[in-house]
Image (cartoon, rainbow, N blue to C red; front, side, top):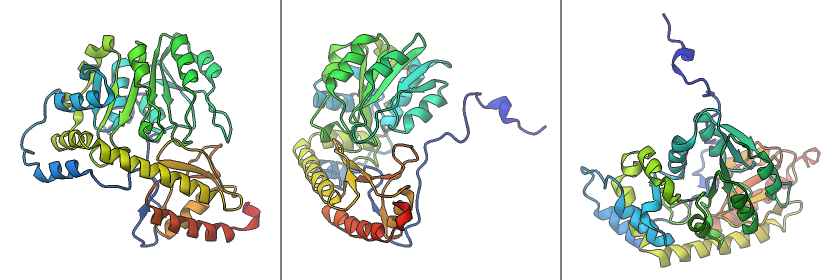
Length: 366
């Protein structure tokens, strides 16, 4: 008898609903990656030295990642016993979902936002409820809409702040209004906190229903090492710790490199400042191109509206020159591209090619 997927696959899993990475044709050019919000800088000096000296790959890391959690706790000024780590922030969110989600529970998000939220919580059997952001250029958070969507099935409100892919920072008062009006968990994904000048760690310490989520991928340039973390409610830690995988899925070299990076904060802060300065320079130059609007950003990327009906054609043209940027199939963003902040020479080249591509775009597409 042939294998029947219906017999073995959980009913709520859809085979086409995964988060995927699109790789356009670069025409043989070595790609300049301005599409995945990675840092343009390499490891910090201490992290580089630690990686070169690493010789204990035959040994498991600390079972509870105590050294890593201590370093992360010191960085944020929180008790390390409240820190959950993971192989990237997606892994930390997966631990959150594993712990709290039962089939039929609801998770509230605000689209457009990070696409992993919908796919991951759907995978766990949750119903994802979207309370859309306001239109351009503000992409405002609908506080009343979120509060109106909360019901007895709501397990989690997930807020991305600063938001990806729009880049904007929601007012702190909006977050507090949501937190204080509900007893369900409220998670604040602040993966881009170090580029925004804003932290929500104090909210996780002040309220017993708040989780804050962070990553070492952007600020510390550790995207290839996959180290994410979060600050979780103290009263719920025994359950979250039980649901978390052994070693928190963080490898020994990744943990040691992350700890060394946090000992190089002056270096990391300097790199973040360079990214912020370059973000503002790029935005100003983009806004000089007729019909182009770079939205204000509190992240390491810029969302840009182009004078075309569908920016995918521009993305494809840029890719043929080896310049990779992101496009999103969302009604509010179909005319937009998202540009990760790279090096000045990357942006100068991008601006030159973008001007030429837009000048050659047929008028009936504008």
